[in-house]
Image 1 (cartoon, each protein chain N blue to C red):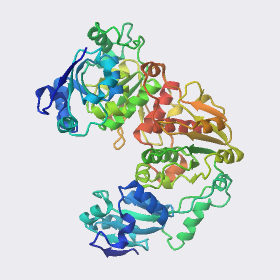
Image 2 (cartoon, one colour; image 1 turned 30 degrees about the vertical axis):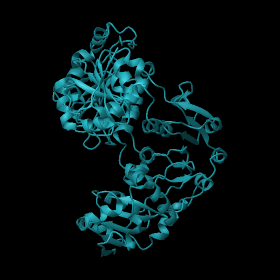
Image 3 (cartoon, rainbow over the protein chains, first blue to last red; image 1 turned 45 degrees about the vertical axis):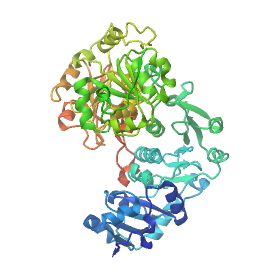
Length: 301
Length: 301
């Protein structure tokens, strides 16, 4: 049972996990040093807990307690009860969406591990079971036992909103794994988590350590590498040669994929634009729309 | 040649078109009464002019003049030059994106007219030619001469960002026409125009006058009506029966299509969600991602 603790001073060190939530740079260093992330709102907090992330603490105004009573009964962490004024002065914004939770990050698997067949639960799921042995009412989702066959590789997507939206697409359509380039935005940053509707907890992901060479690790694991490009001379995606294992590489909306990655791809593919759009100079699809179409083709072929 | 006019008073009545740009209610009545809309930034202003919308005036700080010199040479309207402070106090926000333009709206065709074959330029294009007879250097895009065959019908999408994003998708993928329900957000509202990247000028659209009965007008013109729903018991979109003319009905992300419209549809279709997404309770795709996938299926089948 979570312990309720009233705190009236925004400078109380027990609230340190929640400081400066609107300050991206501060949060980036704080969260990586402490190995935490922030979940916002009852729905997202529940998903984070259900997927095995240990809660360090929750923070909310008293009025939100009833709506989280069942969840709090399963947790052992402190619940800090504060006033609206303390919450706002601490976090930097008016917290309207109810509870915030500070959750522990789980260690990510390495790239080679994430690509190999698993007959036991995937590595990051083992932790779920270890952490939750005394929470029999937590609904641990069924573990994947097969190897990933349809994956996304994101190169340098630095926009948290786009990363969150891509996770939401990938989860809905059934992508098996997302590989992030070293400079991609953090899927567990508050904004990404929120936009993803919690899908960042549903799709396994892993971060490359070597931008220059890690594509060859993925190819070595049997994946055909497709580079998605707005270049209309590339092969239409619906006609691209697929295979048992396909990795689709996506770049950012402005810059697209680097020339190094395009050169490393087995094939460049595109979503054909209408002739009238080209004539009128209408820009290509935004990255989320393009990802949605590409993921749908990826998983249905 | 546009006439340059320095104005130092935000209350000058010549600036009335630009008042309160962050006040949605005020803008809605002002823009419909005056038959105007606001285009923001050089790229969007150029597209609005190129697609035949007469400029009432432009407003900017002096530093933006050089980047628009070629365009201004083709226009006859006044260009109001103001300070940053006047621009901000007038519009309600710090105008960083350069020029604003107040443009005249073009009359929309009626629903029945928009659905019929056109061997001459479409009705809203005739006005382009009438208005621009003395602008020989304006590049009027080639007119559609065939009838619309793949159309979207939006029911009560009140979010300007979503409406803009849907127009961008529709333009990129080649949808022929967008039909808006009476309560849909205005595609020419500043936010919609911006998110669409100017695609609101590229895809013809029309507004229903009768929410209850206008679907029958569309069916009467030979369209098969497909209702897109997250309901996983509906027919997967890729397997739906198409036809020569197909109208895809989209509802808002929260409420979806009304039961009246679903009942009026010839078939309810869905984008299949992955089994793991369903097990984890991951929400359906957002409306833009769903629209992107649906439009792609719509135009490629």
